[in-house]
Length: 138
Image (cartoon, rainbow, N blue to C red; front, top):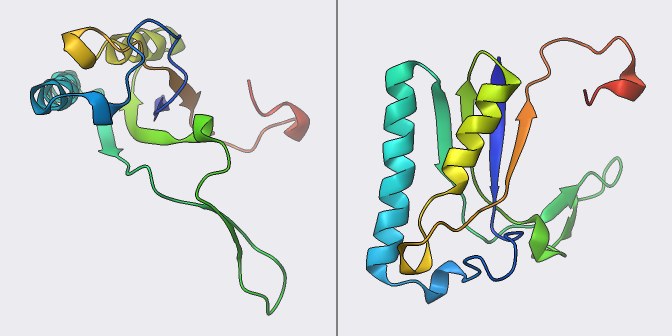
């Protein structure tokens, strides 16, 4: 089953390694990116990696505003807690394996080479229409 892992810019517990990337040295950034690439390479070897990409912090909310009207754009993001740093799609046998891999990815090094405890949102792909549309989250 495929899962989307969303990496959030914010949300790490305060005091663990709560330093934005603009406070990191170039070596710390390189180590973080190398960790991500090594993780993807390892999962490619097990057949569990599908795709992934880092995202820039810039962006906006966009919403359809009706026939003949331009889309409504609100941004930059209203709440920085919602910023997504990147995403990765994995294809694994179980929810438990998806959680295990997300935990490993959360340990990517940050400031001082210490794990950043990054919060990852893990969501299974919806593979068919839900029987009960009110309960399509589980």
